[in-house]
Image 1 (spheres, helix red, strand yellow):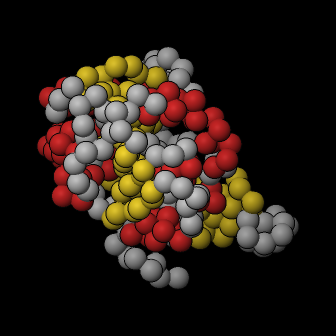
Image 2 (cartoon, helix red, strand yellow):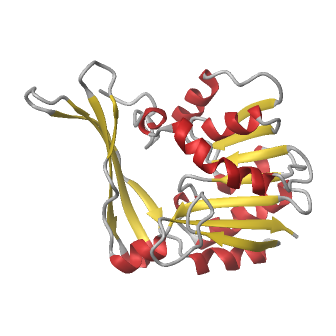
Image 3 (cartoon, one colour):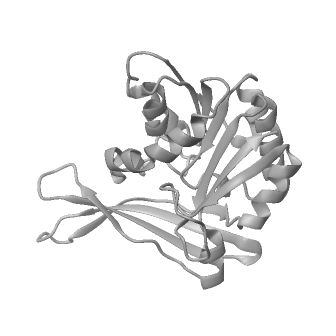
Length: 261
């Protein structure tokens, strides 16, 4: 089957159904509320919003949310799901490096979760994003950045993530989500997300639904904190997960809480 959006690497990967969203949002809620609770105003950005689950969660809490994502397919899915009553929710398609032209100034905070930052593969693009983001935020606005712990992945040469199994569309069927990485020079990674249909007892038991190659940059913590400071942010805290664990070389994620000076 040809993708509806052939230039979009995340078309047909069905991310909404591959994550247990209610459980994830309950797990992440305390840190999200702690960080965004310091926002000077309730208008916030969800950068790399995907299908909009975090955006709708924050909107239900009373925030005025604008979700931004480069993927047309993800934005279409986000807009297809109605928001909770109250608050404001809108979605904008565009890349992080263009944030200064995509949304107006005056936001009180921002989140950028789910390994979005590695799609910016050059240091200049990363710095341009942080500078553009700073121009969209009011003074004192918090920013929560989450990505995989690439210090660990690069140091250990890791190439895979745990397999995710979710209920399939038909009875007795499961959807398998694989994520593979091929290491390249300079901290680059050829990231290959794939979804498969698993039907035990049938032949063949596995059927490929979709697979893509996406080039990512495995940003280390030290490579992010310098550009953040240069753009006018103060890094307040670093965590090893969205539950607020301390960051270290073996943690699953790198989560940075920064504040616009």
